[in-house]
Image (cartoon, rainbow, N blue to C red; front, side, top):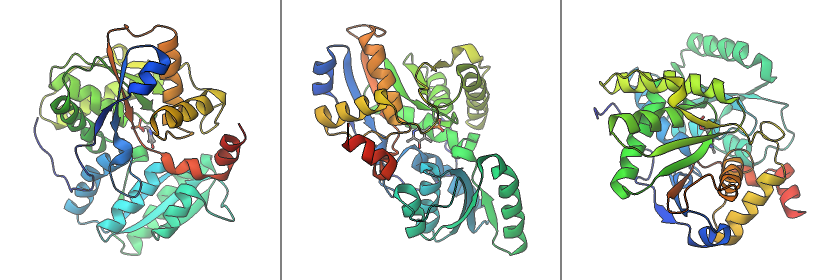
Length: 323
Ligand SMILES: *Cc1c(COP(=O)(O)O)cnc(C)c1O
């Protein structure tokens, strides 16, 4: 694989562990975990890897301010703020939701890291983003637009390298299961699989979008990642494995399945999964194991993509305490 411009922000390689107690509890295939919740940058997560390449691109272009957008508890925005501060850049975030009286969890961390935050409604995010970006240009802030979820080819390429990292740690994994949303993580992993000629199966559990939409986004983005890495491929949407059976009550709504998964991972493994992304993917994984989806002698790796600060947001904490 060709190497592209990168700034080191993450502690790599992230550990791979066997989940022995959880495997025993579920009485299914052997389970493993890849700890991208431990990438080290301000509570970590999958966005750290993407930002290593996005921040490098920003600096190569002479930019001085990172701008991005997301939901109120956006992990991506928290990680963008962290990358900016660590590199001595400024950061502007446009968050979709009502401005909280008392910022908590990810938003609290955004404030601690000095992010300048604009609040807007979800449907006006794009308009606001454009307006804030233009203003930043006029103010001479040299802004760089970090794409939504870090999911451009430049961000997604990080997960092609991440798959290479995993294959250097273990070659015996049959399935990788993880939370998928804006598609960059899955696109990178899929591109990595093709370029490294691996037969690992890469199954994204959708957090918020219908399967077909994710397959379209991911196949397109994975094609662009292959091209960026100098090895273009034709990728069809059908080869992208996505399960959208676990959308529950919608984005960021923590239901009983997520609560069970959060508690099970905490009780059996002392691994924290989050209410929005990894808790939902873990709930899907648990259900698929119970339904006998995986072969009993297969090895299944849960790729933990982070998001744990959201556990401290009141609306989730209260529900988890009272369950
Ligand atoms: C952003 C995010 C995801 C989804 O990754 P995509 O590359 O957007 O599909 C999964 N888990 C966590 C914790 C995230 O913050």
